[in-house]
Image (tube, rainbow, N blue to C red; front, side, top):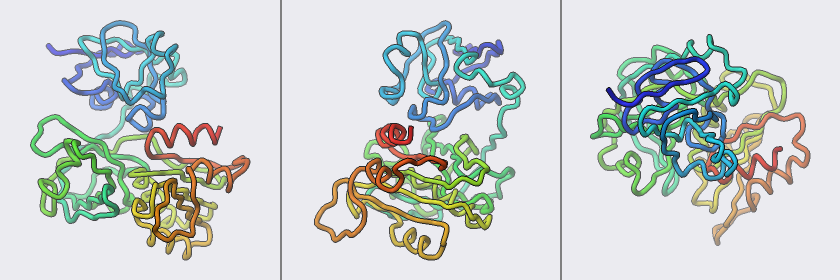
Length: 325
């Protein structure tokens, strides 16, 4: 028998696969815990290790303090069991009920064919996928899917969906190419028009809350993907909430979909798009410059009364949270 994970205070034990995070094992086994970014950036999936050995990935270096680590606090999305492991979410997720935990989330596996690869920037690519069959369940704008790495039986990679939920026969992904990444390094070669991909989902709790408060999106890199999905859905729902999108990049060449988003801002009276460059080069630019947190402070000196939704590189998110709080 392989390794197992036990989740307290519910006394629930189930197997965990080799190379699988504890969070992925929980979700795969039809259970539910609170989580968000799934890469160690948001600290939503905090838990206490009660017993057992584990490995924590490097992605938690800024989201867990030394005191947390000394106390055995981990992030489930970045924790791998090295043998049987017991974790407790009773304090870190105190309002999670047993009914909610056992309710789980409907996750389906499906197959799609790559229609085309879109070059948004040198390292930001769009992958447009047609599904063999329409999705049996609807996703919420902001959620993500896992894609099986071609040539692998068990290596899955997570990517946010950029299309609207009503496009139930399509999945559009926006990803950042990592030169040695097992999935993204294959884009344009193994992964190209006509490639069959195995996917599963939807996953994640990143979603717009129902309210009348103005919305602020702050994103960078491939973090634009869930924002695009949310914007498309807001448009479809005839949104009237004031919405501002702050997107940070280094240079003009690093701005994906610049013309499209500017055109959208011209067409929608409730939407403002503010791109900003942190390291502008010689390319003509009449927009904002500076870190995205500096741009936020200039446009929203108080920020009170707004709802903020963040997605992007961990360093950017960490800095943005400090500005927001």
